[in-house]
View (cartoon, rainbow, N blue to C red):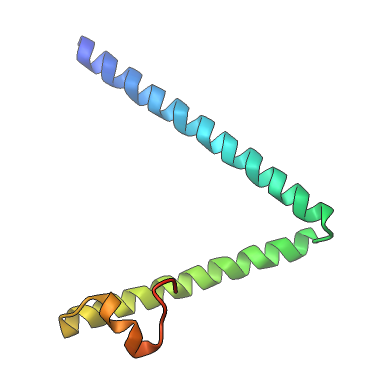
Length: 92
């Protein structure tokens, strides 16, 4: 292997290592958040149900965004311009 490909592999390996470390930090933070919620009296089943509902909400929201995008293309406007027409907030 050439020196540049070795450097590229080293850089890729370093980037992967950084990503692994970041994921470990996120995992630890989530574990701490779950422990805090459990200590506040929430049950694991309740948390799992909440997470499931959030996933469902996000899927529905994504579908709505896709439809708004298609409608905006058909009308030749931006999706932002459609929000008032459907009583949507930009934060929606």
